[in-house]
Image (cartoon, rainbow, N blue to C red; front, side, top):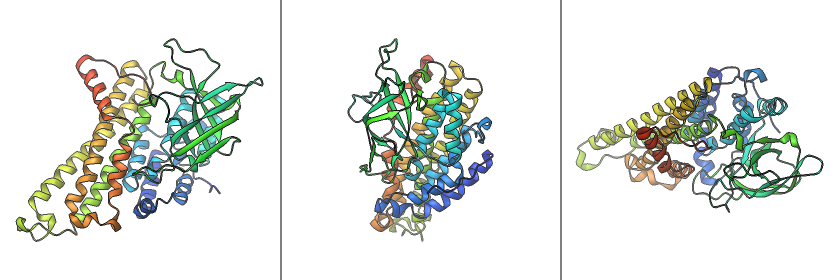
Length: 403
């Protein structure tokens, strides 16, 4: 049963709540991963904390926190548990979709749900399409004005814990857009809607406890008021994609910091290499050099993350072609830096900790497995391409949910 949620009123309260939760979540992160035990109690605690309502605009009763604050909340949670921190990502992305595309009645209803601690999860991506942007799931008009929803989605992070599933689907009875692409919408469904089935079949090597399984949709009746336009969100200057991506960057950067913290703890216990002449591993000059290099890389990722969040906040005050493009480029830079830092810190953790760090009972591999798995979401190689084109020729990045 959902506990009554606190309503947080400021950016400072949000960061404080995230720090408090992160300290508690860190304690059991290794065991949850090792046992592939879904964090049901922790997710309820997240709901009760009030954090799930912090982006609700002030006119609807929320704190309307800055992107800088939201990003820091995710970074703190990911430092503690890169798997658990992934669960609310889609929650905030689809609240942002409502902010951009929902009508007043939809905003009033769903924002109130978020303030009450109810959770939104994604059902976006499909396994069968040529790319992640292809959808076979359809919303088809019923004679009564509603829709019928059919399809199957995978990578549905947090779906098992959701109160609301948000499904991306093609509007089957609507003419294609001028570029020939299908018109898509988002359907906001209660988890217990007839025809909705959620399978806990995520078997990834990392982020094991994100509840990222399969959602099957078989003749689900959808009211018109549950459908929000999606394709048109990218018709003009928007920060929608940058907001989604900066949270991914925050997850990577948090994983990097968590891995480096674990490395420091293990180095304090490690034996020095006999050739170093040091009395303890932390005095080995080569290990000291390696630790310093890692700290520089992680701090750089953290600084670039703050820069990207600030660029998005600035663009939202004046969303022009130039300001939103600059925000997307800054976010791409932060995402690449965070991904590199996460994989490197989580790998070199074992070099700082020595052979003892590889003991199965410590389960320190979770940092690398979480980092390596999460950084596969959106290829860094394409972000680097967009950054280079913008730098050399001023080409703005494309408008889609991955930039």
